[in-house]
Length: 138
Image (cartoon, rainbow, N blue to C red; front, top):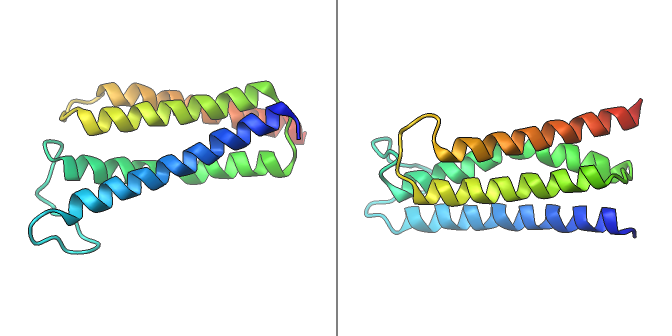
């Protein structure tokens, strides 16, 4: 296995670990709340609640996972060997980690919030990966 593919595999693995951590944080922070009901979050919660922010962080990542995972897995299946593609996987991962940390740390209803910029960095990285993948299919 060459180094480009291997670094992409490592970044994708770490993305999956990050997703697991987000799920654990969201699940355990909610379960510690009084009268917690499995599968439901109090609709009166907002950004001032860590439970809300943990829940939204996890769900925001889930909402974006299909496009990212699909792009990366198709590239792996097609044996895309691109340093730029690997850098984009790492960029996406790091942007999502910073997004997560900011979501956990900042209680804001402001839009755009600081986490928005890291969300957009992740989207841009995913778009570049899709373009590389598309060009490779032509």
